[in-house]
Length: 92
Image (cartoon, rainbow, N blue to C red; front, side):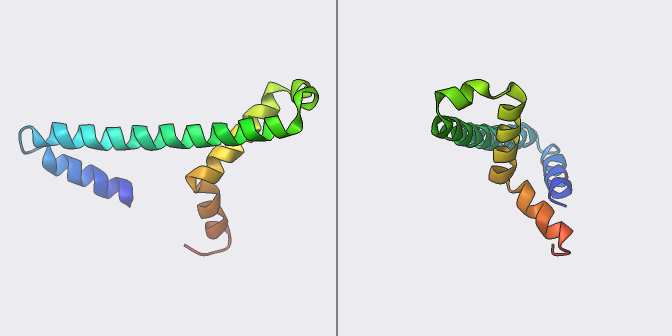
C-alpha cells in the first residue's frame, strides 16, 4: 500500500514541471540514506560479534557464516523479521 501511494504521489507530481524531478530525487535520497544506515548498523553488529569471539574463533569462521550474521542483523535492523513474525502469528 505504501509503494502504491508513493508511486501515485510521484506520478501526480510529474505533471508539474520540475516538481516531479525534485520529489523523485528526494524519495531516492531518502531510500538511499535509509539503506546505507541499515547496512552500517548491521555491519557494526557483525564486527562487534566477531570481536567478542576473539581472533582464533573469528579466523575459523567461513565467509558464509559471516554473511549469515550480516543478513540476520540487517533483517533485525530493518524490521522485516518483526513484520514476518506478526504476519505468521496472524497479526498485521
